[in-house]
Length: 230
Figure 1 (spheres, rainbow, N blue to C red):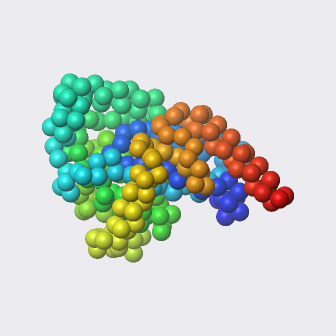
Figure 2: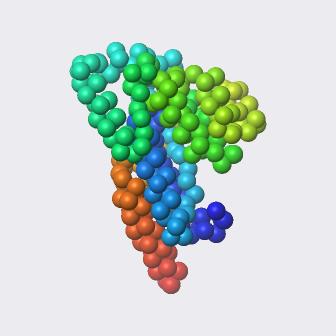
Figure 3: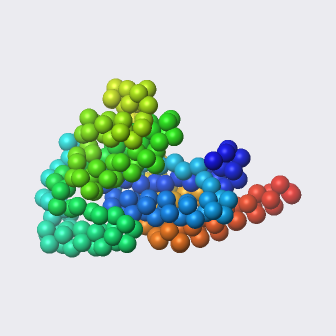
């Protein structure tokens, strides 16, 4: 994808959290939508941006069953919501293994890894690896060693992985961006922002995402044309 094409189509920021099942579904649907648009000559620079659904979560995470039972009022209600997610996931070609998920992790470290993967152009691959590790394998994505292994398997450079393992690289930026989105009024993820314009939130079907992006590009290009003409 050449830089001129990227500049014409725009920069698409995907605001998401690694423990949000709808963010994984939304990412998979976005991948399909981007494939449709690429056939039309529309390509985008895609960046993953951090949002913590549970910013007060202890660094070591908590027992998932106990946490969600308290959050939603009962274990049965929590399991009902999991079934809804699993049904939606199947439509997107994803298999959720809630039976393997025993911890609800803090996601700050996951967001750090995804941010640092940007230097290697690997954010989409690393985000996908983290989603799969949590939702299909039940791995603790709050564990820095597990995250580093996921980053390495996804193809991150040794330099980026060393920066992650050092413990602080990207931490301030992740926290600042997370807070900035809250101040901007974003409360749900995934949210999709094209050239600083919030387009929509939620895990919409690929065709809807493609249509939304197609329309947004047309509007922004028309505005740019009008501005250039004075």
